[in-house]
Length: 160
Image (tube, rainbow, N blue to C red):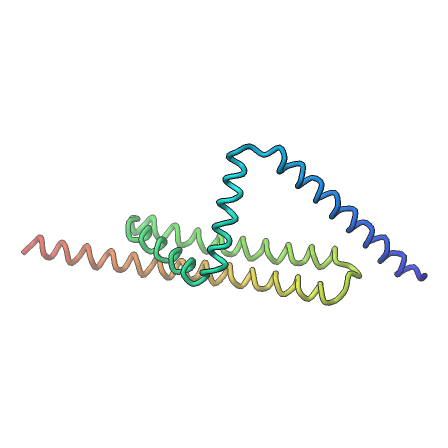
């Protein structure tokens, strides 16, 4: 057995021990959960399954809710929120890339296939976060413009 084979074996053993420990801890936590924690976990799981079953509807609902909120917010506040959304998207993208890089570093000799998957996931999350922030700003600006036009039309009708 070579040195790298020994390292791989030690890594595999550490991973197996860690997985066993995590499983034991998860079982212990579930046994000690309160009634509210159980309901919250079940609600979270049902929301996840709904989002997986209906991804387009989930995104459309989120965008519609965002547009409604943007229409109810003052223009100055909407602009500030749009900037914050871009900042949040950038932070999320940076976090995803950092997570991906750390995962790549810790993957070590675990195999190029796993490394490639982690890299793809990091890039996908970073891209999605940036796209989401840009889309949120675009919808916010459109909702703001619609609110302005509606307000102008109402004022014109009131003046007549």
